[in-house]
Length: 71
Image 1: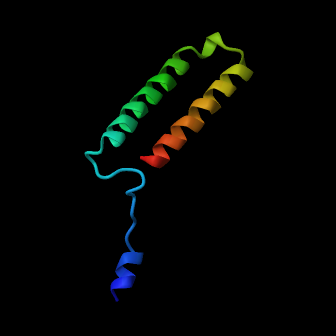
Image 2: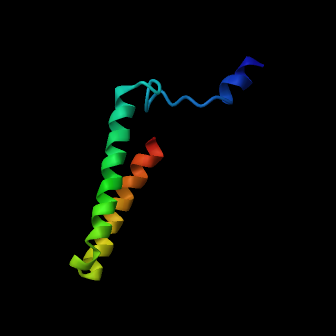
């Protein structure tokens, strides 16, 4: 029965050792930066041709998705 309990638990130790892990703090700080970059891009949408704006948005979106998936 103890094997079943170990199978039901997720081990995220490969990402972070705990909520106080410095790597997690760095990723949360990076997330703040990614949100700020989105806001900056949103404020400058009129400055870019549509194709470039979409490319920039997709690049930021992929980076943000990778980071939020990890967190």
